[in-house]
Length: 213
Ligand SMILES: Cc1cc2nc3c(=O)[nH]c(=O)nc-3n(C[C@H](O)[C@H](O)[C@H](O)COP(=O)(O)O)c2cc1C
Image (cartoon, rainbow, N blue to C red; front, side, top):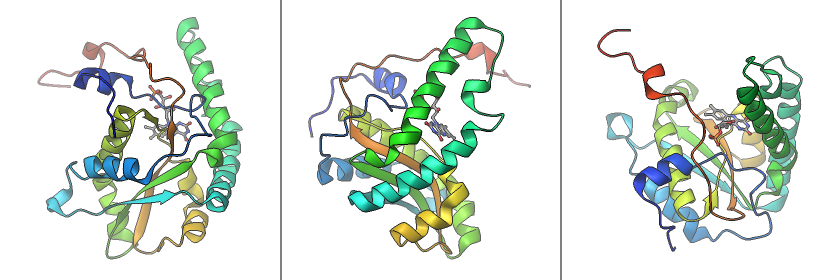
């Protein structure tokens, strides 16, 4: 696949959670997914044992079913005090950005199942406890997957709230619930345009503790 002309720092600083700018009409080739998974597999794994697994959902009916689960869980989140659109800081600019994020997340809440591909980042263990303990093995890999996708003009959005209904999603996809833990659910689609900007984030000195807390 052709890669966008991005420096490493541009790639790292412009890989956004893409929701409204996902192109639901354009198919994603299987080989693009394979390339992203190949990059993900270069991420670290505890004891050098690769337990990360990717369930790549192209089937329309299964996507719709997962989208419906996500829609229901999202509706509960939206009604909760932790909903992004309800978090006010008193800083008008910060609140404006939160409002925009909330509206974008609302959109994905309604449209998750319409993405041409859904990707579930999972980790496999000998049993449920070891699979859950190995969740750290999928997180770096999943982020690498998303960076690789961005480099190929594809958009993703990290979500995890579906785990409240993990068993239902396992049933839809035939994932063995007792030995596989699901960590992340992301849409995967070409983006409408490829120009994404760095987000407003705290200054590094606000989050660094030099030598002592
Ligand atoms: C642990 C975690 C959970 C998230 N859950 C959701 C989610 O359920 N729905 C969603 O639309 N975005 C979700 N996001 C994406 C964040 O909303 C997003 O990263 C944040 O708004 C910043 O936007 P940006 O990544 O484009 O800079 C999640 C991100 C993380 C890291």
